[in-house]
Image (cartoon, rainbow, N blue to C red; front, side, top):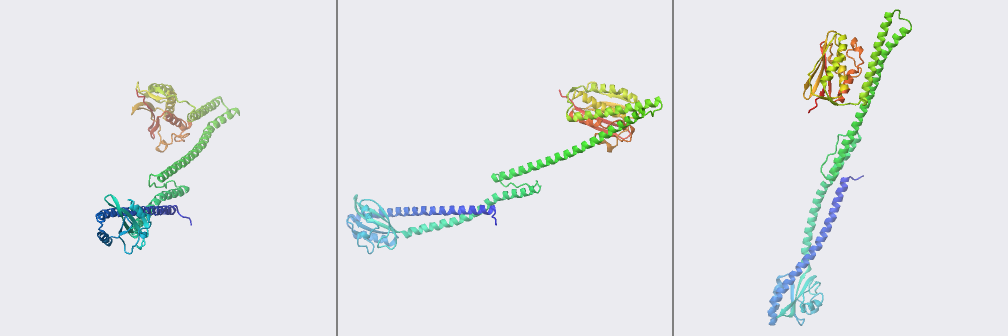
Length: 483
């Protein structure tokens, strides 16, 4: 069975901490052992020096019995034991059973060191004591000269008891430390493994195609940065896939539009070509019996040819704008002049339909930013459509007004109008308003889609308002140049 990362981390923390505590405890033991021995040794030296000062007058006066009494009283009430040796290496006071100097100390040179004025310390056994002792030998001075030596010994068991007590405290502290470290290790391990589990869950969701399940970020450390980076990667991947899906949909839509365009273009081209072919075959086959009928056929053929020419020109213009082949030449324009000139050029066409065409424009409109040829083409498309769909005797007015930093141009007619259902469709290619009407058959359905493309490239807008059987208002806007 595989172990989880959490259990591995937790055990590692606990084991490393346990080893650390054992090592620290061992060093503490050595330190306190050395410390207690050092402190005890210093205490014994101090006791010996004080006792030597007390005994010095009695030894000077050779009051050895008094010295023995003092030592005896000390030995009764203290754990440490003392005895005295004179400079001739004979006992002044001794422990019970002591009878020669060979058993005064672990090493015989300790007495020699004390009689030479030095403090000598040794650890070991003394024959007349049942346990190992720490023994300190100090000189006793009388009038500046060494008159003997005093021995102070303390059982090592007393020192070891203090060391063991300290060792128990260290062990207890170590146990508490282990519990604390285990508790802390648990949360540290959790803090490491929890974000990793979150990342794992998010990865599994991502495999299923769900990019919304992000990993929770619990900290700002390296693990937190990893989780944040993973989330960023997920969002980026999700965005990339969405972009690819959008591009795929756009390509599909474009392909569908291309098919529709080819189908519509083929249909629009087929109609005038069929008419031209039919009338020409009739003329060539001699079906026409009179000159009047022949002229009629030729006029129809000419009309269909002109219609075919307009259709091809519209297709070419639309294709050039979409592909960027037509260079947009933006500059400051006098819109009043362009409107008046276009209206004047199209007046004969309106007169043929007994329509009133006029311009209602201020003489000095603000200059706008645009392309003169393209703006004129937009006006021509709007006005010719108005002429086509306005009954005889109607009116067409081209009006320009200033509105919030723009100039709005409106082509207003009193024509047949457009139903609300058709308003949103008029900008589509090859769409013809109410195709059962004879007037709609004259156009190719490309004029308004061309207007839309032109205005998009001039950073303007094109829109329409209409009421059925009352008329329409086709409009466009251009930005005023601020000076």
